[in-house]
Image (tube, rainbow, N blue to C red; front, side, top):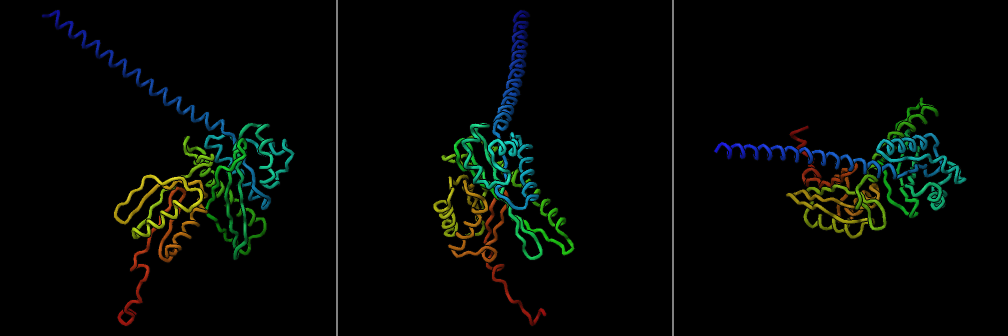
Length: 311
């Protein structure tokens, strides 16, 4: 009997030891798997070499600030950002050349440095009523396939210019704001480029996924708007994760279109179904989200009030 008990205790101890060893081995396996995944992701980014150019000649200080900020943001995001000036020199192209001049030599670029992503930052400045308005966007191309990948833009920014602000003061304000906008633009581009495999269209263009929420619309208005977005908007890929809870209609909208253009198309479509932005609906746009809310009738129409009683 004692022998049997000893044998049972021995088996239990052996089982416990085996379980501990198995747990230990599984923990190390999971650790190394996570480590290798991280290394693979880092290598994927590191081998994705990028050149950032100014799209055209213009305000040299603002464009230089924008290009530098985009390069810095992409570099901090893990991409291998190469020196565009050395490349242009090797190609015999001046730094002030238009982007079309660079794109004409994508084959030469690929032969010199291998397949690269070419980013063209378009910074434009316009004087408007005692202020300077800056618009900024970027277009991305693949030098290997000589193809357009995607484009992105950030909201315009208007800088008030005091009357006592001279030329140097004005240029400084413009450069500072261009740098801020370019950092935002670079962050958006990094997120686009970091999307996992499969987030590309069949022609190689990058797909953006936007959360769209339509609030307080009638069912027929939702159907009309979504139908236009699905069947008539250029760059449409697919709609996923559709949910409707009461007055809220939510979806993920997959598109290769530029966000600024998409917003314009939404405004046109709303007008087509009889709704005007800021009059009938409120449209709120953030980096990855579009909210379209219909004003309640009582808020939209308002009343003159009882001016006899409340004067």
